[in-house]
Image (cartoon, rainbow, N blue to C red):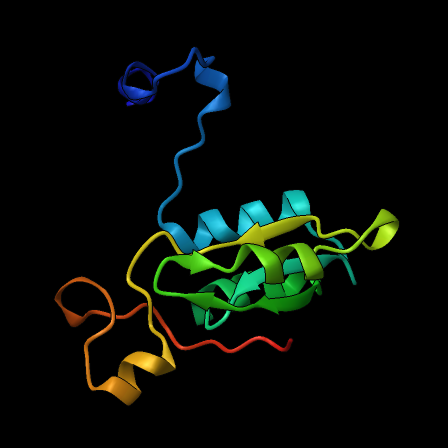
Length: 125
């Protein structure tokens, strides 16, 4: 399976660089262990996937919410919250699809394709 994944990628990769997990939650935990330490800044889309926040919790990061719209994170808000120096964000968690925004509920329209949402986690500003 490692070889099939390497062949699929549009760049060269060693087979040892490919890690196959049993699910997305495990992948999120492993990513958190690599990038996050206690009190490290992590930017997340508002709202975000609650499962991601739960996966990152053991590393005790500081989740900073970044405003978003139907297209994703707002670049201006991201730039304002990324921080500087030692306080600079270590990572940003963004939702690739299936947005769940309050505005959808207010408009009565379903979030994302087919009306399927992706959690309702609301990190602090």
